[in-house]
Length: 216
Length: 216
DNA sequence: TGCCATTTTTAGATTAGTCTAATTTTGTTT
DNA sequence: AAACAAAATTAGACTAATCTAAAAATGGCA
Image (tube, rainbow over all chains, first blue to last red; front, side, top):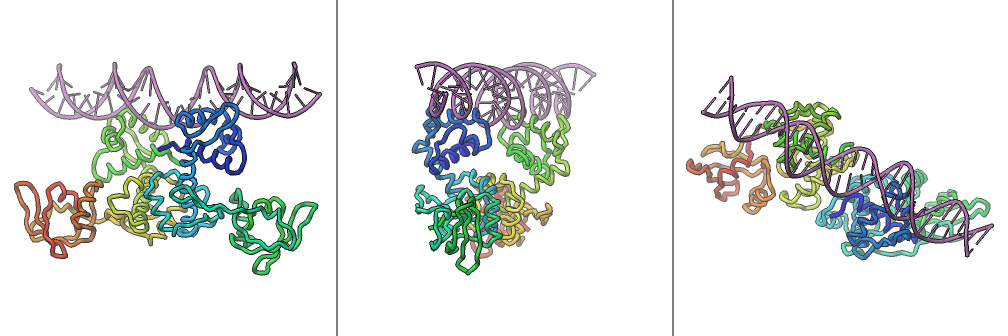
């Protein structure tokens, strides 16, 4: 259907859009680790195919069919991540790169069967929602832990931009999705927070980390 | 590690070699549905990388490292086929094309975990042996059903060159791997054979089909 | 309002992989 | 052994995807 590079660009534009960032040429090129001129070329090609609206000098937006294609890719990626963790016993910090390859395998039947095999999961191992066959997914209003104040009782629901390093760090600290968190103290001067977990353990996290832990 | 096209060529050369055919430029190009000149180019590239020995005008042979690479690809392909049938409920005549894509996903850990998840299968859904981590696999001396004579009692062990159409045909006839077969008659004039299956069913197969059914 | 730094696009080159058409080699056949 | 058909290689062109360097556009600020 699409080339690997086209798919990578569609996904990048989608991700930027949903996080509220304008999908500018430079933002896309940074995400894909290519040069801006390469992105311009690809935007032209995608525009010709009717997948993006490219306003020269003013970034790109997905068209309806471009968005549909991007959601298929996100569905594939998140289902494969779930498979790797649930069925093959990978850790959540090991799955991204492999899923990045698997998502380009194009077979609707494969993905639908995989979905069923996994029990139609609604969230992937990082807490991100998995689009269904029609591109629909659960939307939750989450806020970063860094916005909570002392005394709040919350639950860890997803990890934003979870680099493998961050995920590994959390794993080592014994922090997993679904864990109950009580904020015991927040420190103004550096933004770090003291937490009490559901099992009674006490720990402290930096502001950077607290900004990526999305809670409910 | 290798490009998709390099991998396709390695696998084609390997398959030709093990079936006793010389891996000539034209034989490879026919398998890959490309032109002979494209194959010549690729053989040069693979020879530079030390994966094949290319004797111009006299075909190609895999080097030790080329053979090792090809076996990795065959291992991946057959494990994925097994996964599709055993875990996702695909029919054996539906898996080839999808496995053809999945085999290019490169992650040793993925394949080893998949192997374990499937219970270290020794044969794929078509009866072909699956190489282990070290490239070793079971070798069986099979012969085509067409070489059997009336009165022989045999077991269907694999289907050679199983095109999707042939596999689908066998499925419709209720013929599966492992089925016991007694040859009740062979017809000289067109090579067709009369068979009695383990469950008592009687059927007749053409010479072409009998040449592809490998028995023990 | 006009200048300037930043961003984006354009122009032109490069690489991998493919093709067609022409040339060369091989090996069979008379 | 010479000729010829088949197979393989070479030559040259094309496309997709990338890059660098140069030119153009944008938008904030003096």
